[in-house]
Length: 87
Image (cartoon, rainbow, N blue to C red; front, side, top):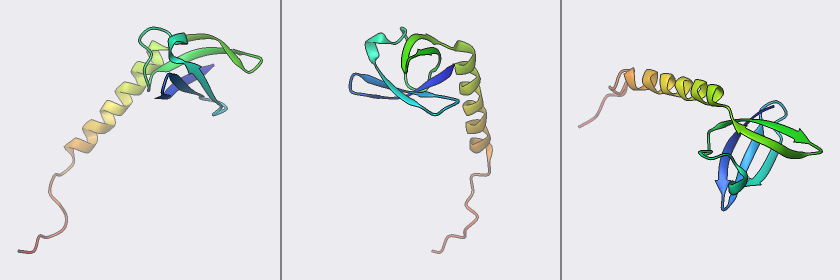
């Protein structure tokens, strides 16, 4: 299953399953090395517990590229305000 790290709360990571939008928490030390908020994961669930977690590099890079593209589009828009400034 695909999931992503939504945020860290203290020493816990909040992980969201993409399909079901289920939310899980896991101690940060149980995550793969290099895992940070915004990283996509491949997880295996068994009896409502995550038994396997690995970083999904392809999905993470795809998401980062998409965000970078959208940010570039926003930055390239006209910088002037459409409102006239009164002196």
